Image (cartoon, rainbow, N blue to C red; front, side, top):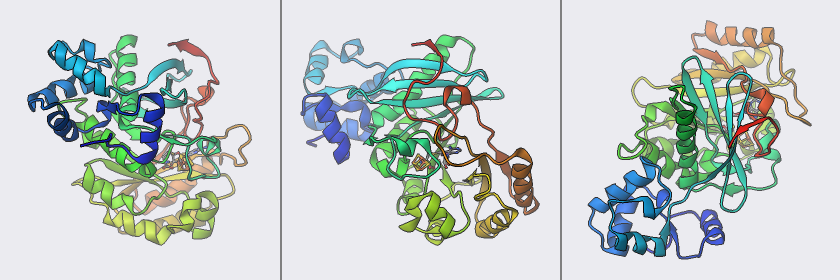
Length: 371
Ligand code: SAH
Ligand code: SF4
């Protein structure tokens, strides 16, 4: 194997941050790492497991700390490779206990990851890109000028940092669920996202269950069935509208892949037993929240094994939409429930630190607790 197994833009970025020849070993899956070690260093296969455990279970960032590798091997590794990841800049804590981690890449760009407490469980919302090119009209991330793909190491590192932050808080909490619903469109950074998922569920590493991980997409249709074939995780889709006219207005990607194409891809997603697709629906006051919309949604979803997650819009400075009132949201939900859909309403968390859905932009805008 020659160059780092990364997509073009990540490779360019990695090259900018490190001398060109260095390969990010934490961005490789176990199999890729094993192959690379054999091909490049002539190392026996058991070394792959040792190295993988150091990076993904012990979360070590330097070869020097990998004490069961010989000094010669550590030096050899340092000449050709590095262990990618992020630096933790700040942890902001909201009044409701939501924590926002501000993390920095080697190129200085900042991304966010949010830890949301729900009863006795914690859901972590991870980012897959700096910014997002999909350009949804209601989403703050879409306003960011920059767009860069995160490396698989940088995606997984958000979880590793969260585990450390929670461990240090000493409240016995841990990350229970992971949702790819932070900054970016995961299926627009497909290769790196899939590598990060494979590594997070690898039992030699973080050992998460795929059942506890959900990837959310705005509708990158060709990648939807492929995701389910490549890695056994849950799928969420941001439907957000019930007519093509409205959906194209809100999510420009709908012009390329319309609702019919999206529904076809959802039906083709290989669902594991007893799992359902999550259909997300951002409710914009006076825009897509009528009872007619609710009835159309029922018709659209017929025959799909799914549950519906209603997300009342979270405003951000300069946004032109409004949050519908609670009664409206409940009435919309009731139409779906009457049609026997499971409906959850995601009332926002962490708004005072800009950590709610669609409020992520990598800026510091709240009270800092610790770094
Ligand atoms: N790019 C992916 C995942 C990140 S966005 C996607 O779009 O699915 C995660 C969710 O937040 C999506 O369902 C999106 O529709 C929703 N969202 C974006 N901005 C929002 C806002 N201001 N208020 C409420 N939900 C928002
Ligand atoms: Fe990107 Fe998702 Fe925001 Fe749309 S809602 S701009 S796809 S992050």
